[in-house]
Structure formats: structure tokens, C-alpha cells
Length: 203
Image 1 (spheres, rainbow, N blue to C red):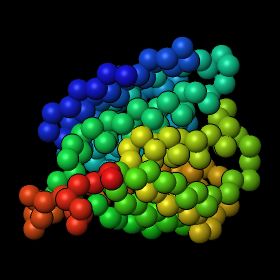
Image 2 (image 1 turned 180 degrees about the vertical axis):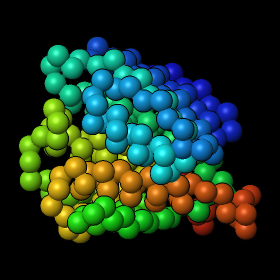
Image 3 (image 1 turned 135 degrees about the vertical axis):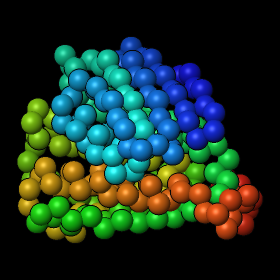
Image 4 (image 1 turned 30 degrees about the vertical axis):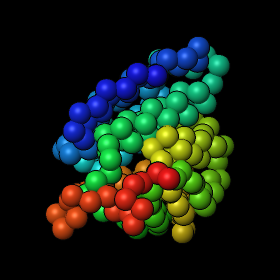
């Protein structure tokens, strides 16, 4: 994996025998996106993540889709998470904690995050169908797990209610986006400090 970062901008590339992933992002962007994973529904979700977090996001994945969509989904989460972590640098000045409650028609989803450097996922989301389009619905938990692990974020995702699987999944990505947007904002009152009594994040 190769990484380049400057300020709150990062570019990460990861090549394995299963996937080649390129991610470039700007945490202080406008929510502009350019996404191509080879999986239409995943592209749609990552576009939601970018737009509602205001993170400018470029993603390219060349994966082994002739096998299935698992590696492409998981590895995109890994590399986006790694890019977020790299762009945050020392974590100085961020608000760190945030939550979002996102409705989408009949669906309501809650996300709470701690940009702590300690990855953890709580996933209380049940989907009633095995697929959305051509994508296995079990892969969405894999994406969130990979993202949380690589970004070093404690992430609690809970769908409170809903019936439409598309709405449930989309509300999860939008909830993450809004919570992430708030958590990584610079607090002018603490802009020169890491938001931890330890003086560092991640240990």
C-alpha cells in the first residue's frame, strides 16, 4: 500500500492479487465525487457518503468481480478508511465525537462515532433480502467493518426501523456521512489540541 498526504488531503493505493484500489480525498472539500468500483449500488452509496460528509472523494477499484463482489466491497472500505485516517494526521483540533439520526421515508437510522484511533463496529442492521440489485446485502456490514478498522473509528450503526432495504442501507451511509462530517470538523476553541487527555489519539 502506498500513501501520500498533505494537510487534510490523502491519496492511498492498494494492490493485491484480488483488487487494485485507488482513493484520493479531501476532508475539507465540497462533497464532489468521482466513483467507479464496478458495482453500481456501491458506487451510489459512496457518492452519498461523499456528498453528505462534504468530503471530496475519488475512488477507482479494479476487482475480481468474476468471482464475487466481496473483495471489491471490503477493499474499498479499507482504502477509504486508510485515506481518512491519513488525512486526519495528528487528529489535532477535531471534535472527535458525533452522531446523526437520519430518516429516509419509512426508515430511521442512527449512527454514533468516536474518531478515537480504536476501531470497533456495532452493527444493529437487519436486511430482509439477500440482494440489492446484484449486490449481496451481507456485504454492507463488511464495508462498514473494513472502513471502521482502517480509519480507526469506533462506529455504532443502528437501524431503528424501516422496511425497504434500499432505504435502510442508504440511510446507513448517509448517517455515517453526517456523523463523520461533524466529528472531523475543526473546533476553533481547541484547534491546537488533540481531543484527548492522553495528548494523543490511537493508544
